[in-house]
Length: 132
Image (cartoon, rainbow, N blue to C red):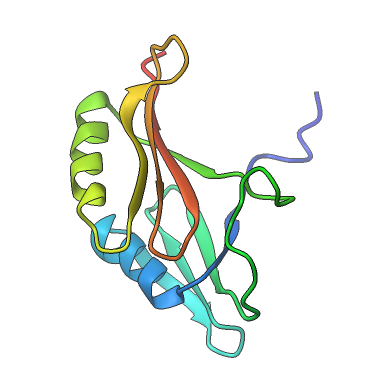
C-alpha cells in the first residue's frame, strides 16, 4: 500500500456567486475565511478539518449538471451525529438561495443518513452522518 497520497489537502469549487457562497460557508455553516485571491476572485474557507477554495466563475455557461459535466458530481461533508445532521438541515434549508434536493433520509438501506442541497453559488453539497 502506497502512502504517497495521504488524503485531500483541499477541494476547489467553481461557484456562480462568490459572495453568496462565501456567506453560506462563513455565516450559515460557521466556517472561517483564511485567505483568497482578489486577482482571480477566490476565497479560502475552513472549519478546522476541511478546506475549500471557492473560485468565482468567470465565463457564464450552462448551469451545473451532475449527469453531463466531467468533474464534480457533489462534495460530501460529514457531521458528528444524527442530531447535528437534523439541526444543520434546519438551518441550511432556510438559508437564502439554498435549493434543497432532498431532506435527511437513509442512504440506500442505511444506516447512513444524508441530505443534498445546492448552495447559493450553485455547488451540489451532501451532508451525511454514518454511525458505522
